Image (cartoon, rainbow, N blue to C red; front, side, top):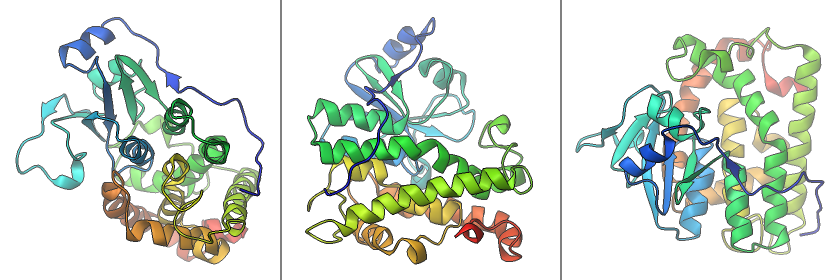
Length: 303
């Protein structure tokens, strides 16, 4: 690939704590055998696992997880297709008691149950799938890269994007405590500089990977076909552009060109994200519009 990255220890997925009643709940709904993924594939974290499972042709039972406290219910005819994961027969809220039980109390989406063992953290799940499939180092190195920068990128999204929208909606879709520390005036300039420096490192590494490709920019980070590296990295351009407001096209042209090629022919499992996530981005932009326009709260000021 022409580039190497420092990495933390590779993960086999993050197993959740087994709570009393968890196994019984999985068995009750026949989620204790095979692969069962709890996700909303229009979300920026769920899309990684959805692309990975589809790429590997894994026979998966899908359960939609919504951004509320909805108890488990059937997906009925006429349900808005933008609010469900294709192929799912059931839906429940990320803040519901059942989802909290299944995920060992963490309520993280997506969650993947494999024969009754439940895993969370999207990149860690993709890494586990990659290692089980004996993916080459060029692929696992890029998954690890996404793992290494995941936290800071998601924090940037909360700070420069999500926090204002969720505050406007009185935190109806999320746990309030996860967002009130972010947003205009809630972080120091030092924190913002350190965060944007990390974002620069991440996207510069991706830019270098694409520059070094003998095939040129073709919509894939490794070779000339979709890999699990593409699954792990799938959301980052749209997340940083649509959520945080970063001008990715201006600062990282190869990364942006690669994304444009990818979304022109979305891989299986990614369609709800490619076509549905921009709706969230519109609301986020509206909530942050004034602060971004007057320059007082614009991530691009650090570039």
